[in-house]
Structure formats: structure tokens, C-alpha cells
Image (cartoon, rainbow, N blue to C red; front, top):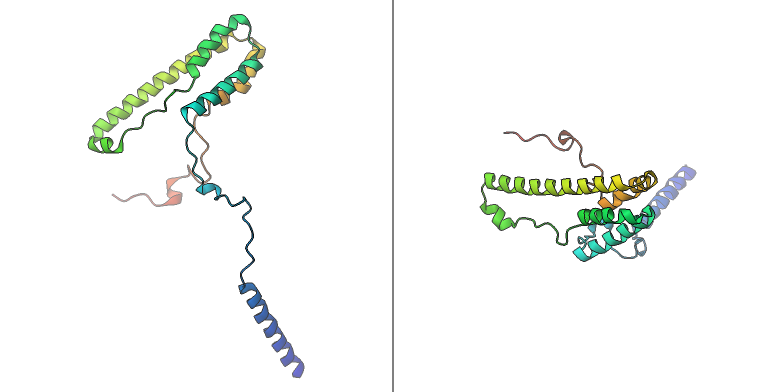
Length: 176
């Protein structure tokens, strides 16, 4: 009997000591990322027009060097670069106060006008790319196919995990 009682007391003492040890706070350790805020809290400012132009100039110079253009291809290159160059000023977003003053049909008309303008600009860029591509030799076309996509940019940034799933997976549809 003494053995089982002493074993129970020993087990209880060990359990309470381990609970006290766990309850103590761990020593503070420096964050793994050097004290920077977590990635999801970091806000990136959009690049300035000068930064965008500098990046575009660097990428286009790299592409031109890889293509090894002949003298007769230079005019097509210049036309291509002027057509795909990013605008010097970012697109203007509507002022929220002005937007709130508009009726729904007026908002839709403005959205349609902006959409048509962007579509026209995109069609002009596409035509300039096709025209330039036609001046390239087959070896140059392979280089262009591999290298030009970053110059023209992806259509949209990739979506974070969990976005783009069915609405019913997140919440039930609204009731009328």
C-alpha cells in the first residue's frame, strides 16, 4: 500500500511541476524575420511612373540584346517599344465623391467608355507586337516567345489560395 501511495504522490508531484514549467513564459526570442512586420501586414506602394519606366527600359534593353536585331529590324523594334511602353501616368480612378453623385446608368456608361478605351489600346499593342514579330527570324521568334512575356506583363497577378472558389463554399447565397 505504501508503494502505491508513494507512486501516486510522486506522479502527482511530477504532474504539478510539469504544469508549472509549462505555465512559465518562454524566453523572448528575436523574430525570425529580423523584427520586420509579417508579410501580410506589409503594404507595398505601387511603383512610381519613373520606376515603371526604368524597369521597362531595363527589360526592353535585355530583350533587344538577346534578340540580336539586324539594322533593318530597328524601325520595327522602335515601333514595337513605343506601342508597348507603359503610360507615363497611371490610369485615373474615378473620385468616390463624384462617383456617388452619379446614377447607376451614368456609372455604367462611364465604365463602358473606360472599357472601350482600354480595349482599343490593347488592340493597338497587340497589332504592334504581331507586326514586330513578323519581322523576326525563326531563331529570334523563339527568343521572343521565351523572353517577351515578362516585358508585356501577365494579365493579372495570381490569386491567393482560397480565392476563386465557389460562393456556396464560403457562405450561403443571399435571400431576396
